[in-house]
Length: 380
Ligand SMILES: *Cc1c(COP(=O)(O)O)cnc(C)c1O
Image (tube, rainbow, N blue to C red):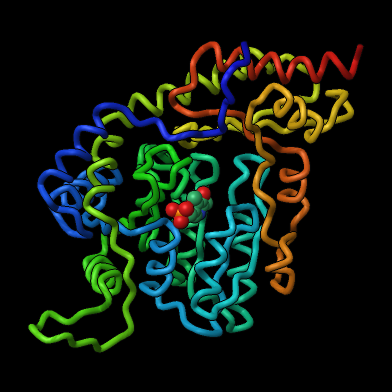
């Protein structure tokens, strides 16, 4: 009997979400407006600890509108980490602005606050401050917001927090998504909370919330005829998907616990292997444990990261390399990069293990056995 494939981070949906979805369907709020959308927004704002949440069709759409709200325009510069998913940088390009990429710190794999502060200082001297800074809370762990906010505040540069991977994480007790002028959440199928595709912009700023809501609904003026003073977008989330999201949020604490248990299991079962490191957990916060990531020292482990991925594949288990940094992407080869050896090293040596919140004990054992057999195979 062959065992079913184990996916990296599949959707974890239950009767709770199913019931809410069908209730929304039966209510005929089958549109990008309705009570589930309102309730989903209210709950997200509450979780993130901000006044406003605007539900959107994707995290990428939320990034796009967040950058517009921060005043980013054609020809502007935006600082962003290189080690991220492409959506972070793509949103900058949509506006005709240019990202300048910054290296990561090995302490959390997030943007290195010293490189960020240094870049802002140098740009202030040259009179070339960026229009905005984007941080990313990588793999469910917050960036180091103490020094990051100090630097941004000193030069008056707005911060956009890409918390697409980090809903439920905290930094010194404060929720991910709450640190910038605006925060971005994603509900893509592989994220900790999914609506089957969707996103959210969260903010404490009344005018940002108002502007983003307006732009996300085609910038239609509140008059009977169709009046538009600016170019808008069709970026609202469907009420049906918001109903799924409401169910997911009810289950979020349990889903975070499950991912944490998976991280603990992998660490206990693989941490003794030579050459195996884990994404470090910084003492300033609590992650949401979205994905468990390893860093492989091939010399000590006796096999490369890619050989481990191949071993997982043979056991019908989905593993993945860590994000390929933007400064190594053909699409971004012309962009400026500050540093780069840390993020390049994370990419060449890092991998993500299956971490879905519905992963069973048996699944975890299969993953551990597959990784251990690669180690044993290379030695034997
Ligand atoms: C998933 C993700 C996004 C994009 O979210 P979508 O909802 O897929 O558009 C943006 N940034 C990061 C870091 C992500 O992981």
